[in-house]
Each structure stands twice: as C-alpha cells, then as structure tokens.
Image (cartoon, rainbow, N blue to C red):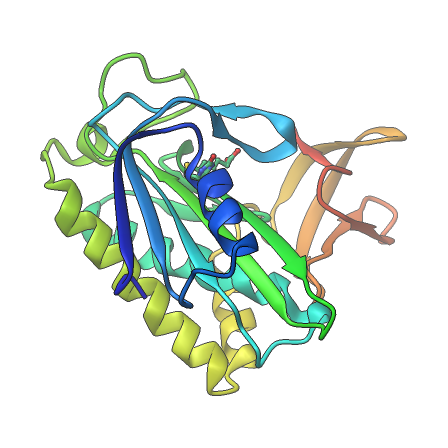
Length: 244
Ligand code: BTN
C-alpha cells in the first residue's frame, strides 16, 4: 500500500479524486491519494469533513480485495479501525482509545479520526474499495467541541509524512492478516475495542430512546444492542444514534 502515491497541494475530496481514477482503471491496488488542503471533504451520513490545511492527514487508499465476498465487506471497516486504533494507542499511550461503531476512533471521548469507506461491487462480484481517512494530527485551533487531535492529547507536533507511513503500514498489516484468512481474529480484536460494549448506555432508534447494552456486531457489521427487556435489536448504519 502506498507504492503509488499521488500527492496534491489541494483537492476537493481525495475519495472523489480516487473514484474518478478508479473508473478510468489507471490504479494499482494500494494506490494512495493525499492532499494538504481538502476543500470539499465528505463525511458519513452526507456530512462534510473540514480539516485545517497543512495540519492533518486527509487521504484515501484504493483496495481491491479479491479474496473477500461482498457479504464480508465490513471486514474492511474493521481492519482500518484496528490499524488506527493501534497507531493512536502508540502515539497517545495514556489516553483511552475506542472504536465507536462502525468506524470512528475516539480518544478521551472525543473524535480524532473519521473514516469513509465507499465500496463498489463490479460485475464479477469484486469489491473496489475507497478508504478515506481524515486523521487530526497537529490541529489545535478551531476543533469542534466533540473533536480532538493527536497534538491536543500528547502535546507533541508530528511530521505528517511519518504519520502517514505509519498509518499505511498498520493498514497493510491488518489487510494481510485478513487476506491470510484471519477474519475471526480480526472480528474478535474489533469487538474488544468497541466503545460501550457490555455497558449500559442511552440510544435512540426510530421508535425512541432506550437504555441498552452493545453486545457486538454480526459478521456483516450489523450492530447488536440488548434492550432492557433482554431482547436483541439489530441496526444497520444510520439506524441508531448514541446519546450522551
Ligand atoms: C466521518 O464523517 O467521520 C468520515 C470523514 C472522512 C473524511 C476523509 S478525509 C479524506 C477522505 N476524503 C473525503 O472526502 N473524505 C475522507
């Protein structure tokens, strides 16, 4: 991963840019597009992603996991989350790091990384995946109340290129693990790091608010929450909100 590296001074969205190249079929698996100044970053649920130019990492990785069935695509969310988890644990050893389902990284209860994975299944059932990552590294001004950065936590300013190569190595590590058929281990590691797993918390779904306990995820990424009556409720992305 990262052998083909396209570095742009400015770009609307690295996910969009990579998607355009993918259509033209000019990409090698593992290609990375990175920009210093992303002007129209996309977030989950149709949100936008703002990142102060020059301070953080905003990049996308192109993967074509021929060894995965479409029904297993959530394993990509798992490996990318685990890679960022390991990195953040290393860089902020004193902090509490969690993966908030499906793939947000939280440090000390604030969001530090946003991941937007956009998959396309081609006519041969091969997944073409664009893994977009926004990682707050050196930004300390203008952060949202609910967001943080590595520098804010550790007081250390990092060289972005070094952090990029560490993230890429970590993703490659888990990607190879997935490829060598260790999906079970990956699922287990992911579950261990899930925010609010096995503790009571407050949620909202389309029927209202309730107290529940996250019991883990199904293979395909569906989130399982046990409600007060002991029943298991299952959620797709966007069907459930975490309340304070
Ligand atoms: C989220 O809403 O949490 C996901 C944010 C993902 C942002 C990254 S930054 C690089 C890549 N390009 C985009 O347009 N979005 C992703």
